[in-house]
Image 1 (spheres, rainbow, N blue to C red):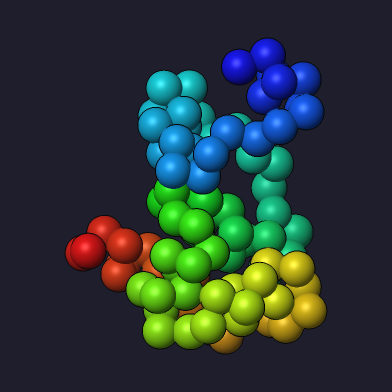
Image 2: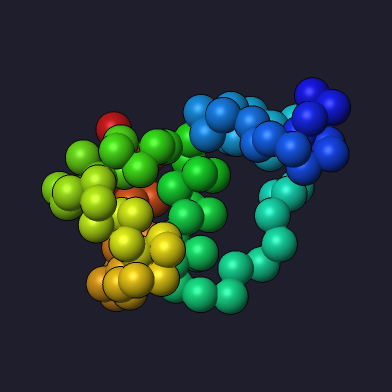
Length: 88
């Protein structure tokens, strides 16, 4: 835990929904790019890039490119991920 608090490591993605619930707020700074917003949704759902890619039917490398800013996520993919993840 102290490594998380000091910024040396990050908690596993799968734990982020529980951490957010425990804190009662979203611990992230507001995202400034489409890729950052997509990543926040993915991590907030506790999904790895591979899991998000599988749900959306895209290659995991595509998700990496979206989040890095190399490519812009298509319109609606954040909302689609939210919808699919809640149904699954």
